[in-house]
Amino acid sequence: MEQCRLLSLADELLVSIVETLANDRQSLARLASTCAHLKEISEPYIYRDIKLQNTVEADHIASSIKADEARALAVHSLDSRLGSSTHYSSRSPPASNTATNFNFFMGDFKNLRNWTLESPYTNYSRWMGRPGSRWIDNDMERIIEVFQLAGLASPLIEQPQPLPLLQSFTLHPHGDNSRYYRLDRLGAIFLHPSLRTIHLSCVTIDEGLEYLQQYQHTTPLTSLIFDECEISAPGLASVLCAPKGLTDLTLGENMHHSDYTDLFQRRRLRDSQDGLVGALLQQAHSLRFFKHLSETSSPIRGLNVFPALRRLELTRVDIRQLFKFEHFLPSDLESLILIEPREHWIGQLDHVPSVLAAHWLRNLKTLSFIVTLHYHLGVLSDKLWGDALAPRIHKLAYELRTGGVCFRILARNDYTGAMPPYLDGEKIPEPVVVYDSQDYSFEARLGEDIPLEERRNKDELTEDELNVLKRHTDRQVL
Image (tube, rainbow, N blue to C red; front, top):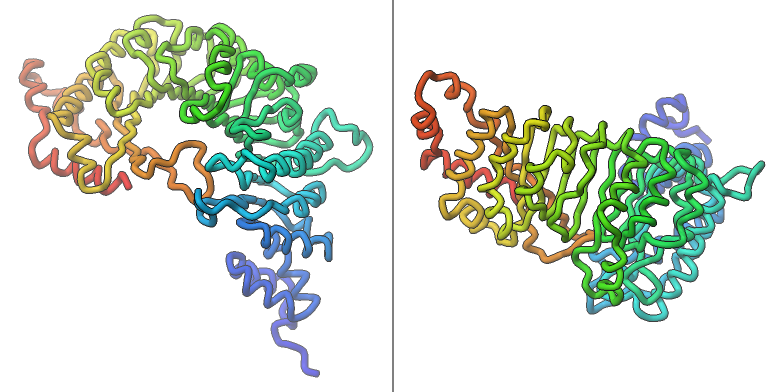
């Protein structure tokens, strides 16, 4: 029988051809079914990036890996979202979760780099009941086991450890009949020897993590995100003792889930700001970005002793205090973003010029507001820039530019009503820049030899400029 001409090509050319089909798994599967040689070349691309959206897919992949364990070595990225909101609604709960068949193979993914895991029962109170408890008893227990075997405290001293190349891990769980999962034993993720990025939502970080303190400054973790979490200062101190040099930290406290039965008790357990700063100080030598989402309006006292901190994002902070005392902000800060609900941020504008009196902020280049809106397109720009707000902001931006500070307004439109943590299929209201003082030629006007009062009058927004600003806002904020 005459050999297929495709097989007469060098393997390097065959690989190049297969790479062009990397995003077409159906074509790759057909190609792999033609002969053993093309199967060997195609399958690494079939299994490289796996996204599981239902239990049928999970069981199918599990069966394929069981039939040929070499396929597990091809997996570089795993995105398991069996409860995706694109597949289930609040009135239609997911089928019983059987993903344990898949999780059984997690230890075989020696080349896995990125792992995202979302419980099928995270939304709509589905964690209450037997299916949610089974997910905790089976799936979470298997995940904990894998990380315990993979971490610095692993009992596998002279044996290959699972997930040796893992770089990032994202987990959206729930507890046993609770919105929140208590971290304690799962804290083993912070002892993983190769993880650089960890993103956790809806977990309780409190007691039971003291064992991490045996491994101070030993792990390569650089980026850590807590999203809608219940966080105590002692628990945070245990977590932050492990990384050698954390550079990015998002500390998102529980701000949206009042259905958590122990909510007010947990808030009473939150420690003083001194305890919070004490936990953060373990990473003061390396922390360059810090984002704190909290309901408190008091600035965090003590951030001035963080020499590496360059970018800071804070929510609902009283800026009258923020710029009044040196101990609230590091002197080398370059970018400060204030995250505010719309009804609050307008009241803050009168106090913004006080940043110019904060002489210790010698390197501050940008001051920004992130505003959350809840309007449909068509009325959004009028709502944002109505009541003569745009000219007011423009004058304020001019004043800040005289002090060398760029002023920006970012907006995000959260009209869908979804709340964090944002799960698969949910629209994330990403902030976009709608006003940037760098877009206006203040410098040319500042150089003119005219009185300050006249100079400011020349920088009022014209009607045409205001209309351009509104059109730009409508285009940017989707």
